[in-house]
Image (cartoon, rainbow, N blue to C red; front, top):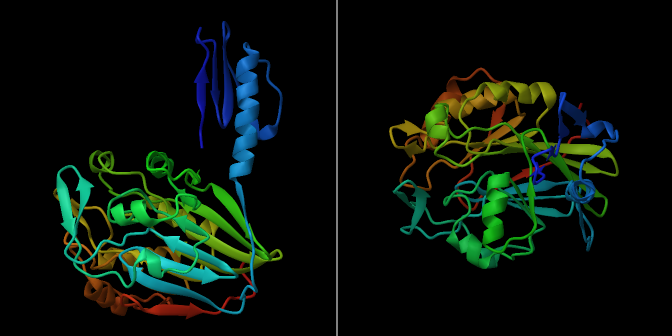
Length: 340
């Protein structure tokens, strides 16, 4: 999260990553991450900065209450529909991109565009087990719908973009954790630690179109127990094939499982999620051991279905194993003991 303050006389600006002091001689810049001191023109701004830094430190770590015995021998991904999944491992239960509208109902996507739900979700919110947190790629009606806004517990932690956190706050969800690309936060529950890192993602390759849409995050979920890393799960989010995807395997190799958003979502005269062919290319780039396509047939604006993905996967030379889930099916995984 980035803060900015300018004093009444415009003599001082504070940014979350840097302090910029405007002087007669020019600019004095201090990198806050070094922890060095800076002389402020206004002590009230200094106090604000100190409070903001404490708040940021609190937001980078989330402590959850543990109850019962956690299972570290096996985990699962339950596919509810669209980009909505339930991920369970190590005593943690994570809901992604909650959208529970019924088949035949419509969702507003902005700019005068509505989409009809074509497939009934596998369950409703009342059917879910207790949720620890939500990981949300972005704030769009097919990823966080009216049902989610009305029925989810407003006290649930939600990890997403700053844009989504702001909009959800207006709906009463006050425990939002905003991450910029490559930023991370830790979640602790009993012996389990989940490190969530925002991955690069972009809703459109054309900048003019991208500016009309919400900011998007992919997410990397690293599960560990008492310091030993056990499983690495990557969720693409609603991204297109952008150059920054190439950085993911360099920074975070040995991804165990990739959840790949496809569908070829149509918007105006272009597509704003990957087609099946592009989704397979994203797998080839990020190199997960196993990949599961999701977000492929739930709404009327989808152009590229699961068959497109399967066809491209058959033609691919990647060593990744492809797994296909219908709504209501579960993928069960066994953690690895080593991740470099």
